[in-house]
Image 1 (cartoon, helix red, strand yellow):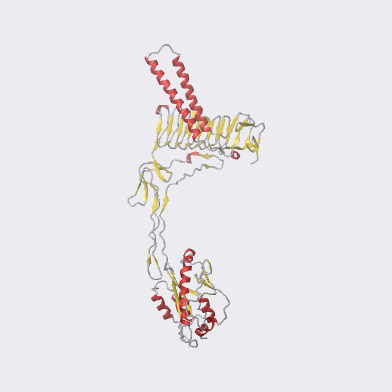
Image 2: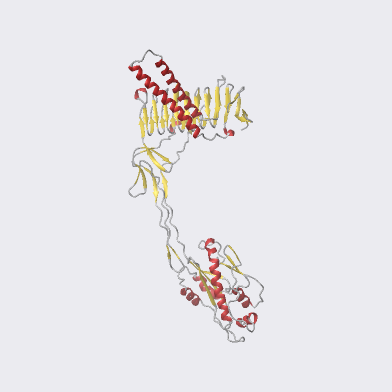
Length: 559
């Protein structure tokens, strides 16, 4: 091997020059995990001397991943932070080697240097790199034992690649390249806790339909019954995680997994071990907001009639029989009726399910502040904020701020008026006898009905007050009746004023005009479709059609 010390002197020193820090260079550029050293860097100069080639200006590329690809121990964000300190340490090491080369007292004197080992530890202690420089003159070659001693001096005792360590002294191309000689074990974070629900957070609203397209509303159980002590959900605790180790043997603690947010709401309790969420009482389980709640449920085993009295309940109601003529049923939650609803008043704060159907005899009123499901709806007034679904609607006044769907069973809408803010979807609309059937789309039908009912109440109170005031001179009983009736009128007028103010403050955006349409498989003459006060009268039987706004006018449109 040529005498590198004399070669260095011949190339870089002239009489009068001083020996010092020469060409430290730096990071010229880096791409992800590759560091490129410029030609003037001391390590490039040492490489050129060792190869006995004139300086070609070729840079030196060092791969921090050492050809291993994307190593999970060395993510890019970690490698990018190692660039500057790595180059700084390598520059000091290379400069020191050059100073040793020119340390001979006379230009003709040679220098013997053993094979050199550069060892660099990452800042987080998860990796150790090794770079070897060739011996100079009669310097000794490296041995596996010397390499191991170099690691021990720097405290590298964990994750050493022993196979690579033993092979390095005999590798023919081991100089001026990086080797990942040791890798730490990163900590494995604990897994986050989780929740296993025993009850669905969003009930699956699916009506079973048989091969004859008959819907079974009895299977539509929107009220999820639960008994005290039943498990609502399981709480899976987080794991602690597995500690890691740096290459110096330092234990790196693992962050524990995050605890699951327990969805504990009203009338629920945790088990003693904290792993189960239980019902604190019998009732109906429902997920509201971010928690499970158990709401009280009123189970009525038979019929409800006028003789039963007014049924008011703050929770859910399950009526196993019929709701007969003259009955009044109100619930803050949902109402499930297994039988028939007759000429009565029934109102649900949430969903209303009538398994058999409604026979209103032109006086019955059924109201749901969310969704309404019924086998059939005949001669009644229907109110539903979100949607109405039935097998058939005959001679009804229907109000829905969402959609009306009549597709199962007979799937017919005959007579009456169906008002829907968004759309109506039915198998058949109207009849061969050309029965007048009105479909009104748009607006806020539920609020229109509420305004109409309150206005009827105001008108009735005014009429009653006028009759009382027209009677002969006041008696004590008449004076009390007048005071009571004036109060009734005042209350009704206040309700109407409150409704108008609420509508002004919370006017919802109108539905998309393109979606306000009637869609059906067959429509008969006598049907009138109205959208935004523009009407279209069907004059001939039409199959597979849709009617909606087109260029500002109501008429058939393409599906």
